[in-house]
Length: 145
Image (tube, one colour):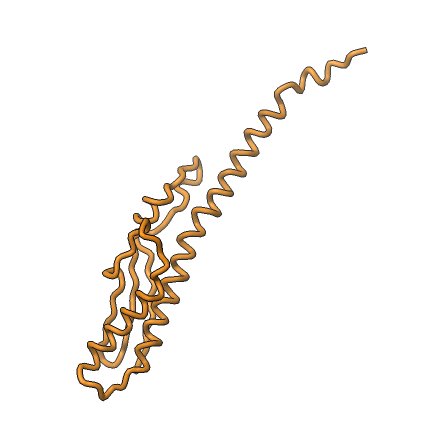
């Protein structure tokens, strides 16, 4: 005696798989697409802090101290970011350092459009663009001498 139950379920597994796969893929792509900006932000914060840290070792009585402090901070920050691949188009001009009133500030400003060129955004209905990034990724570190 045949039951009609299996006949009614024909194709249901494919539909369920398609629905679950879309959700799984969106979560997986979200994890991957946000990991690169988070890695870059952590690296920018580390590089800015290292730039400030390395400039402390300079003797304040040195001739041209303020220019040397700024240059040393930029060089140290750039050295920390040499791992970034060329496809992300990180330029030394994204690192700025200022020394005014005994306050050294190192700031890294990176346009997130460079990330979108490597890792395209996925537009999800009801969610929007993934990853949804600000125009610039910015990290700052400062030290009062």
